[in-house]
Amino acid sequence: MKNKIVLLLISALFFSCSTKKEILYFQNPENLESMDKIKNFEPVFEVNDILHIKVSSMNEEVAAPFQMRTGGQSQGGGGQQNPSLMGYMVDVDGNIQFPVLGKIEVAGKSRSEFEAILTEKIQQYVTDAVVAVRLLNFRVIVLGETGQSVVQVENEQITIPELLANVNGITYDGRRDNILVIREINGERSFGRVDMTTSEVFENPYYHLKQNDIVYVEPTYRKVKSAGFITSYTGLISLATTIFGIVVLITR
Image (cartoon, rainbow, N blue to C red):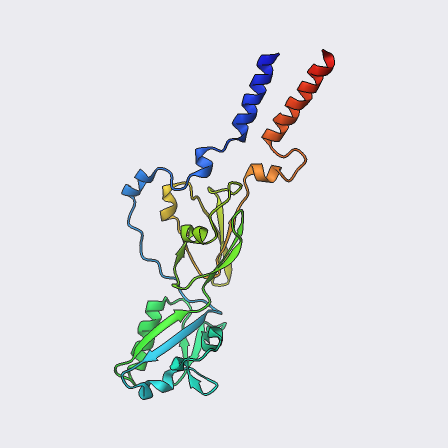
């Protein structure tokens, strides 16, 4: 009889433990040696993006016509205006309306590509023009078993590990091996899965995040079961052990 009780207790301890596969990040790092170097990633602009564009020149008066003006001041003149009101929004056709130049196609181009195109156009009027473009509304939404938040990204580049670090990581009740990334491309939603427990995560196409991505960390089976009456394997075994102990005491 005692042996059976000991066996039940050992089983309860076994099921209450998390495995290495469930907890550790980047397992088997030796596999990294055979991987190609991570390529530079640069997101492309999309409809409804808001761009801050600054045109500089040794002669600021010559560059002034290419600056956005709000309330009588140029975009480069300082002030405390809301940055979103000082940007160019990409319209539904993927274009912006730019001073002097008019309509310019933006959607589908990276920041470096668009800077090169815009610089070439403006240098027809201002030979020493320098153009700097910045995406103002780069954000990523994270949900689930982690610190839920809307993360604003300043440098236009963020990866899954960086995002998780920003929200204090995944809780013990979150699945590290099946993170869902929801992404919208050309008006269509796509879905990808990221396994943070393997070193192959660095080759995953969803390793680098894009603006407006939604990242969802699913709960573990143990967490899902905790919402029910019998909370988990551990709870089930504990209940069975308790009932067994009561029966033993009654029948003695």
